[in-house]
Length: 611
Image 1 (cartoon, rainbow, N blue to C red):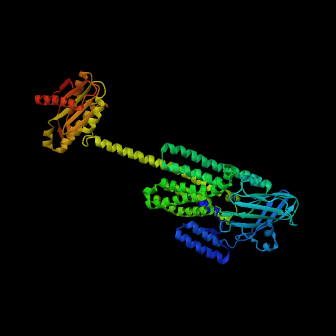
Image 2 (image 1 turned 120 degrees about the vertical axis):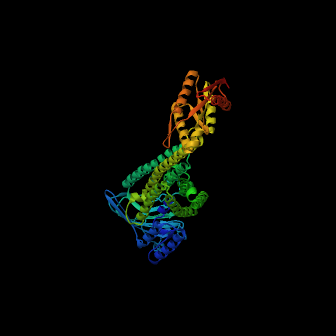
Image 3 (image 1 turned 135 degrees about the horizontal axis):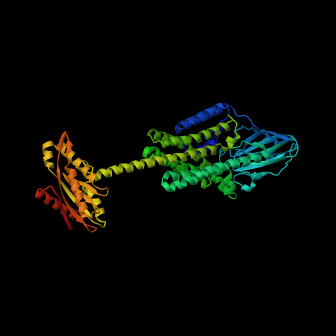
């Protein structure tokens, strides 16, 4: 599931594909069209749930605003007029009796956007009690243009200058220095008042007004900033931590995760109004663009993270190619947003989000079915984001009331999702390292098998050549022993090859038992063995070692309930200079060994000349 679920949360309400669904017949017709569209796109079950709930919520009703102070109370009703044709030229015309009939009760989940670019709100307020300080504001930070007119008293006189602000205006135009688009009301006495608000937006936004007592609003804003700081801190910590790990492990998934965190952080900062406040306070055109650029880049990096984390190229190449196509579309949205086509870029982002939900969910389930354990953690992370977005949608529909969740649900879900992803990355790295260790162990086994004689477990000729070159390159006196078994052919002929194999294995074990750890012993064929003994300057000690070897080999060997006895003829050559060649050394030792065999004596002849 792609992180652009945020778009769906920002479009929460009785709206599917940017088409409002009214009450009665229009609602059901709109629902049927939406169902047909989502069937064609394979939208998952939760979109069906969304559509069903939209049908069951019932007709939209007018809503009220209310705030309570220490000495005063403010209540009001909101009506609206979508000025789709741009009929209203100025406030005087909007306030005229001819226009009054065009205003209708506003639903609690009123939204505006490209389909209805301009909305007028009329807020009829009644203050009871003493004078009050109030704030009238919108739940979003991203409406392109907002103009607050009023308040007007019962005689129709304006009590304050208009406040013109919005995302397309410099940040210092916002009253109270607030990220939210709000108006401060000073009502000196009880009575009836009217406020008019002109709203225009290139993207779908909530136009549901809210009212606060001033001190309550300032306190809630401080709490919101604290909570935002915690979420930003979590995302920034995940970003830095995984940036370090990306440098350590050189794994592409970590790199895409870091970029995903970065653009998620930028998107949340943009949606919370902090980007317009701190990053581009004097560049409102870029504040508008960031609302589509940041989520588009977030979507692209989230898709690339999913590809790398789930190894989609290996597990499901077809879905991997489709996901690459979505990345391309997200980058097209970046280009459109950068060029100023904000509405088109947002629509494309929403399409990428919906298609990405299907593709990544399908790919994750497919990879999990193939036994790839990290896919389970990936699903868990996406489930957290999904539940957060679903709760925001339900809250926006009025099924439960939670101002905190309305303002913070998205970043709660995003923070939880990315923390789970970080843990999933750690799990993935552990699996990769385990696979690497297994590969190394398998490689060691294969290397050992390639270097050893399969019958005796001693070195074979190729391993002897390699190891001898290393030993003979060192300074010192090194002894090479050629050893051939006596009476071995008779054992083979009389008792069979199994007895011969038993003899060879027993001799190999006895040779290893008499030698040091640094000594090399190899079987080079038949009953021929080669011993390379580094650092043997003492001839008496060498002769004693050879005698012990001969005595060990001459001990009886049990095979198939038989007691077998063999002897050994040995010849020795000494290398006193570094770099002595193995071939020449073996030739000298071989000649010495055959002199022993020709003499028909059970003794050892030693060749001591420098070779």
